[in-house]
Amino acid sequence: MTTFDAALRLRLEQRQVKGLYRARKVLQSPQARQVQVDGRTCIGFSSNDYLGLASHPALIQAFQQAAERYGAGSGASHLVSGHSVEHQALEEELAEFTGRPRALLMSTGYMANIGVIRALTDRGDTVVQDRLNHASLLDGGFLSRAAFQRYPHGDLSAAEDLLLQGAGQKLLASDGVFSMDGDLAPLPALAELAHRSGAWLMIDDAHGFGVLGATGRGIVEHCAMSLAQVPVLVGTLGKAFGTFGAFVAGSEMLIETLIQFARTYVYTTALPPAVAAATRVALRLVDAEAWRRLHLREMIDHFRSGAAAHGLPLLDSVTPIQPVVIGDDARVMRISEQLLAAGFWVGAIRPPTVPAGSARLRVTLNASHRKEDIDALLDALAVALRRESAS
Ligand SMILES: *Cc1c(COP(=O)(O)O)cnc(C)c1O
Image 1 (cartoon, rainbow, N blue to C red):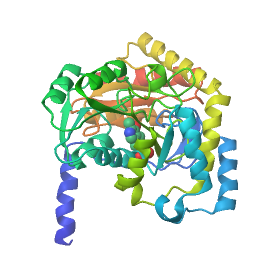
Image 2: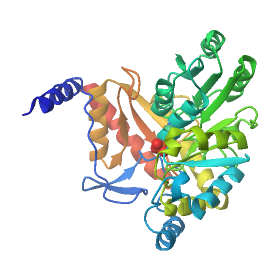
Image 3: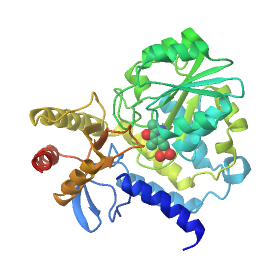
C-alpha cells in the first residue's frame, strides 16, 4: 500500500471503530411506494420525494420530450451559453409560484446556499445561524468572508445577542424545516428579530416547498410572511418537486446581485434543460393534484397517532420528517437492518449529521404511502425495539 493510501486507511479505520462508517445501498427501481434495494423489495420510508412526483408519468414524458428537443446536457453555464428557454420559463414560473418578482435557478441547494451567503456578505460582516441548519448553510457561513456565529437550536435570545454583538451587515439564516428533526423554524419571531436588529433574513425551505401551506408554497405561506420579512428564500427541486436543482426567489435586486456575484452560480454548468422541463410540470401538479399534499398530511397524522399508541418517542414535527431517536449509533444501525429484513427501508442517521448521542431512524412519509404500510412499519419497529431491549 502507498503511504497515501495508508494515511487514508487510518482515518477510515478510526471512523469504523466509532461505528460511524457509512455505506450506500443500491436502488434498483424508481422512487415509488415499493422499491428494490440490494435485491430486496420493500416499502420505502427514506426518500424526500414527498409528493411522489419523481416517477410521475407526466414528469417523465416532459423530460423525454425536452431531451429530444434540447439534448441531454446544457453545454455551458447560464452566463456563457447554457441558459435555455426551458430554464427561463421555469424561472418565471418559480417567481409566480413563490409570489416574488424573480427567481434564479441554481444547480443544487448545496451550491445555492454557499453562493448566496458569499454573495451577500463580505469581510467585516456577520452571519448568524441556527446550529442545526443544513450542512450547506453552515458551510456557506464557514466559506464566507464574514464572521460566522451559531446559536443553540431555536434559541432566539442567543441569536439576538450574536446579532447585537455582530459588526457590519448582518445575515440571519435558517432552515425553514429542520431536515433531521422535522420541526419548523419560528419564522414570525425570526423575522421580527431580523427586523429589530437590522439583519437580512434568509430561509432555506428545502423541505417545506410542495408540502407546507394550504397550496404548497412552503413555510412562508404556512406562516403568512411577506417578501419584505423574508427577502431571501431558497428552495430545492430534488425533494417534493421530484426532480433536481434549486432556486432562489426574491427581489429584482437580489437576483441581479446573485447573477453578478454568486460564484457557485457563475462558475458551474446549467442544469440539463430536460430537468427544467420536468420541473415545470411538477409545479403545475403541486396545484392540480392537491390531493397528494392532503393525503400526505393524513399519512403524517396516521403515523403520529400510531407511534403514540405504540409508545414510541416522537419529535415535535408536523412535516413528513418523523424521526425516532434511538441514541446509540450501533443500535440504530441494527434496528434499521432488522427493518430492512422485514421489508421497510428507513434511513439511519448518525453523527456528525446529527449531534452525538442522538442517532435516529429518520422515517420520511410520502404521498404514495397507504395507512396499512404505516401500520406494518410501526409493528415491525415495535418488534425490533423489543428485541433490542431484550438483548
Ligand atoms: C437537501 C437540502 C439541501 C441541499 O439541496 P440539494 O439540492 O440536494 O443540494 C439544502 N438545504 C436543506 C435544508 C436541505 O434539506
